[in-house]
Amino acid sequence: MDNRENSYSQAFKQIAKTANSPLPLKNVLNSAAKSAAKALKAVGCSIMLLNPQREHFDIIAAYGLSDLYLRKGALKASKSLPEVLSGKLVAIFDVSQDERTQYPEAAEMEGISSVVAAPIPQRGEIIGEIRIYTREPRKFSQADTDFLTTVANIIAVSLEKNELYQILKAEHEETVTKRRKLTETPELPSSSLRPSSFGHPSEQEFAKLLDFYRIEWLYEPRSFPLARQNGKVVEMFTPDFYLPELDLYIELTTLKQSLITEKNRKLRRLRDLYPEVNIKLLNKSDYLRLLAKYGYGRLGGTKAKGMDRVLFSHTQIQRRVNALAKRVSHDYTGKKLVLVGILKGVMCFMSDLMQHITLPLNVDFMAISYYGSNNESAVKITKDLDTSIAELDVLMVEDIVDTGMTLNYVLDHLASHNPASLRVCTLLDKRVRRLIDVPLDYIGFEIPDEFVVGYGLDYLGEYRNLPFIGVLKPELIEEKGKT
Ligand code: 5GP
Image (cartoon, rainbow, N blue to C red; front, top):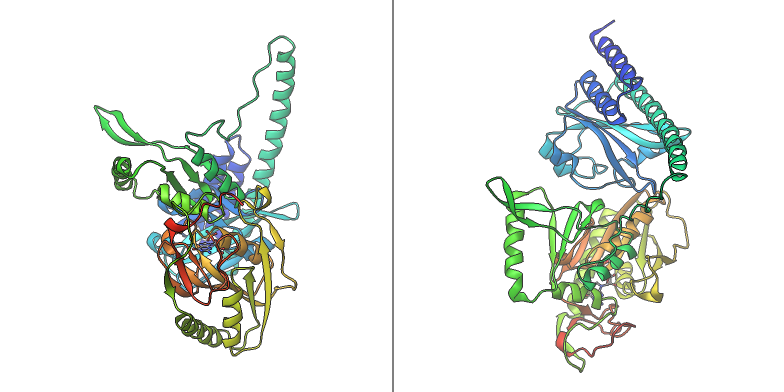
């Protein structure tokens, strides 16, 4: 037996023994992660499970990886080594060069060069994966991958064993509770994770907006100690929302500007003390403009309409669109290009862009419901693609990316249809307002935080036919209220 075989057989012995022990599942899996990493002479290992909606992975055990790396952000099932979900083992020689790496910077900071991931199968379905990370670039051998596949199978058995145990335990507890209920007054039902009330109506409205875009949120889940005296916490900060999939805290403030100074001071302190915490402040005007975009309230004060100024003239737009089309024509030579747009804002841009692209291409459109439309509680695709995009090179064409919530939703949808590639071309990028980091491959213009209309973009249905892009006078827009 050579050294490698010996270390694999030692690891199997240890993993199987722990799996068959009465230890809690967490310990069993952490121990498996450690044994696997050591046997493969790797720097770290993680074990992840798909969430019930099969949208993202949750890390349930790990070894050798820093807290910072483990909390790097949501691992989207569609973006992070998606082939694993179809039961394939995936090995990446150089994570910094491979586009399947979802967080290349985090991997670089952690000193990771190569990754190998094996699916965890259970009853014909992939329920998760085990990943091994190495510091030096490595070509994994057949023996390495066979070893990892077997560890994945042992983990699957451990998970199933634990599930059965939990079911039996729950049944047992139910019987005990039933017996107890015969003699005692019943317990109150457990309270929902949703808060029964919000501190401010704006928070409730914001929660509805997040629900609409199917973005998971928790209300005030964590308090951060900011100052201590004699070991006691004397100052705390509790952000309003935490968005677990984005690993992002949001503090909403509808206070007057004069009162925000104190909040800003606390935020600065929080960022100093907890640099790994990702937090964004939405102030009153950010928040009102977010809602105004969907036709709620007004963009500004008094009445009358009008353009404040032209941001990009017709000629400027044409020049830029032409340049983008040239780059697209170059990059997609020899590929099967499909342009996908979302109605209706993209119509002018799509029309001009496609006319300047010098390649054969197809065009398709989708339409989605917007927040506030028909009182719907969640975003819906109201018109899906007419044709299949499987194995085609999809370029998603957008008029404007603002918070990123729309694009994030649509990209997830498109990725699930297995295109050969998926990229984004947006005419306007309102980067300062981004909440979700969406990848943009082609950008026409970066614009400041202002509400723009024209060249397809509307305000409550109007202004789409302007040949230029301009800024509406915020203080001159008549209050239209919710439409
Ligand atoms: P997101 O989901 O990125 O916040 O918003 C994207 C959508 O909001 C765009 O497709 C567009 O319909 C709308 N939008 C965002 N900013 C503006 C703007 O400044 N003007 C107009 N007319 N629509 C905008």
